[in-house]
Image (cartoon, rainbow over all chains, first blue to last red; front, top):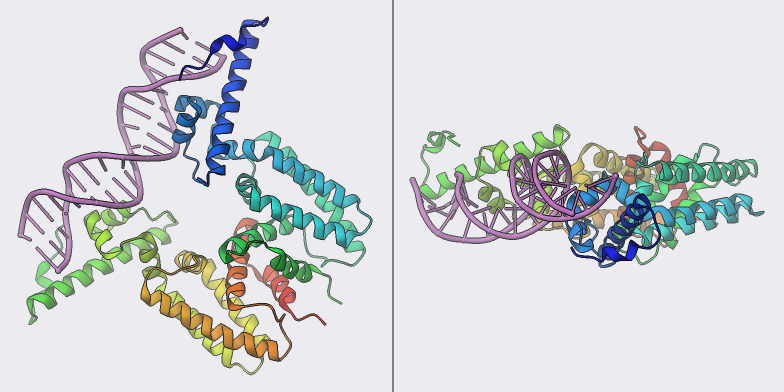
Length: 197
Length: 197
DNA sequence: ACCTGAACACCGTTCAAGT
DNA sequence: ACCTGAACACCGTTCAAGT
């Protein structure tokens, strides 16, 4: 409503100060959204986000044209971590170990970060940044799968897309079951993915 | 709005005619809901159902106190078929075959009947009829699992609840992947469920 | 340029008034 | 008894008016 505009008055051009202001507003909206999610409100109504951020609704729409874009902004950090984990896994000497570890990391990420779970569950990213991250993720997983197939530790018909879908499903199963952790289900999946003689 | 009340004027007491009327109204609401779902509208807004059925909103709420109750009414028939399939599977001589066939039937039911998928994905049924059906389902699956364990064709730590959760997850995975059928994923699950030596 | 918030459409839910 | 639909609260989304 009445946040201090004086904070951006330093030695900036008008355009720069507007950008700084805009960036601060954006950060406030993201923080408000995060606060809601942390409080267990997974609905994320944009009107509520606007009010919590002390901002007009239109501003939310200006920054995040769709709810998907907002979700992707919230998930960006977690998604980047998943990509890093996938890159590490693809380079790990023990392929089977790398695969198991990566699936564990992703599952844990989905469990603790609803925005990340939502983004991983949608087929097409809305923003270019997310598209790039998902592309990098797919590339790394592809490398990992190629090695795994070559070593004969995984069924030859499983793609990176399959893995993503199966993980989304696994997370859903964990939710439905109400189990605290998906360790047992993950074990079922890993055994099911093994190459069969 | 103005449906013919004359249809119930035969040789019934007043109470019976009211019941008949009520039953017709109920059937119309269910049909309207089915039509919406068949038309691809999975949202099922109760106001829209009321309008489509030519009925006041309050009437929908009188018959179906919550959306879950409406979903269960829509899913009742499909759920009964699943129960029958489970009973048959539990009695089938070839246990592994019975298990695989049952999972296939359930998955197909979830895929073609969104209401059934929704009901199977909720931990606690709202109505007594659904509770009974789910109870019968669990009992039949338990019998099947006991036999499967005895024959050593399944991991010993898998419960009927696990199976339900894993199937919900599998259906979710199929949806996310956009694949027309879940045959391959089902194969992964079945292999993962096998007893390991 | 960017932000505000009134405005409109829509859905969930309740409840007084009808039959 | 059962049904109707106005009424209220809430959320999505747009856009004229402000700075």
